[in-house]
Image 1 (tube, protein in one colour):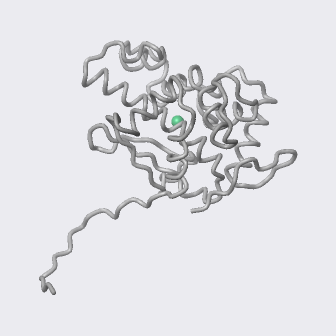
Image 2 (cartoon, protein in one colour):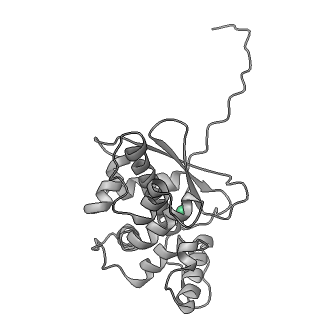
Image 3 (tube, helix red, strand yellow):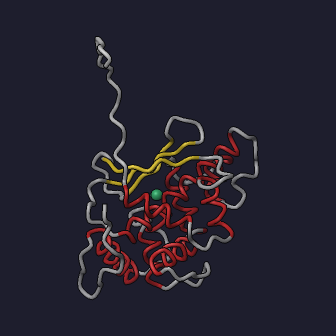
Length: 233
Ligand SMILES: [Zn+2]
């Protein structure tokens, strides 16, 4: 038995873990990983991972986003926080958010490659990011706008294939996903300039918005059924 004059130290409480998101992270690692998806996931998971992602659930300060990625303050470590305001979001909704946030974190690793490791070609594949970070010519002052622009132009098909395989357990090639999953991929960009300035028709935007709401609240809407399964925390 230990007696002590215990001193209370004000340390922040540990973040709340998100078991649902953790299980999706595990499931992602079991997907058929090819090309870019393997490159993204491999940066954060597995034996050669050089970066780390912490996943939690909590407040996003009144923000309506489903999740957010930020630097943790620890080198090569990023935090993904799922918004606590969507307790009924389906596993498909959260998988869609997770792959979107993984791509943000991936872009952050490219920043590390460029800024800290001197790789001037880090952004060559992604013109909006090169314009923002290297050339200083991007049209918006917000890095997230450049990120979303790059996601819209380079990652919709990869996101769609990822969440379709996740939800159906059937491998699907990038570029061959069903329209529903392409819509879900686009739904993760709703509200961004990349989404607003895309060539999606108003009809498509209505459909995408409805499907996103269905999965966010696990509630059918009009002709749109719930496709994902409940997230059992
Ligand atoms: Zn985003």
